[in-house]
Length: 367
Image (cartoon, rainbow, N blue to C red):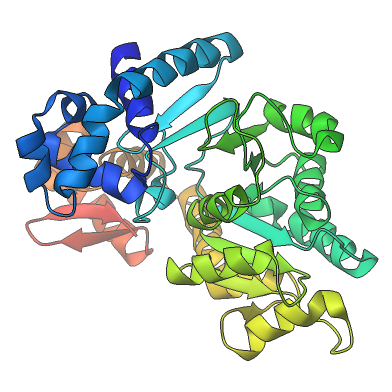
């Protein structure tokens, strides 16, 4: 694993080889390791690589591997979790984004593939209006148990993280620097609480400082790792608008909190709504309605109510179908240890009750 990780890190350390190009190299060569072992002539023939990039790999190979070896020591010492884009623990929503990072570094205890992931962003100069709305929104979304993601910046970002902590929700802070530091340092205590039920995430190696150009790169992760992005207060220009536009490019849902026309901190949100880049949001119910969460939850409750009314035999049947998702009547009869006549009659009742449905070939699944 360490040897594979060494090459995963090394490929991100080659100057001017971005995530899109790195993924292309890995796809054609078969692995990160093979990229470094391939001959120049082969690399040159890969579409979009050419002689210049092939030479960069050969020229910077030793340097990149040296950087990777140092990073391996840092990862082990600080108990970080590396997330390679082809691995299961990588944020799967982000994996579908063409420019998603090849490698991420995570610290804490968080499942980035939570059933629901919500990114909340906004201005650093948040008003009481924005902060109050943010806190209430997160509290109202709590029954859905979403992972709340943001950038751990001043204003709305840290407000979203604090609200998640208060409501016992997992929360992830996406950073624009390496995990050997924290910016802003004033949020160190919040970050420590986040690590208990959430974590810190970055695609930057240790030693990387929070330079200006790093923040837009960070924002693509915030947008890409979530089902939806919510903008709570933004001026005409700012990082939260960049995140919203990136989320739109990723075909993700975007929501914005409207404000008064004269409020500077609402200009960005109002513009997003006016240009159909974001849906207007007034409460958590708007999220539930547009995302279909309300309907899904109601159907789940209805199904649970139906299960309560089932006979013991029907509960056994339902449990077996649930485990297999789809199952033929012969196998079902065998696993339930019930005669075919009994299985047939029980399934018929369950179908009338809306618990199961029949598929072609006498295969059954839960509704």
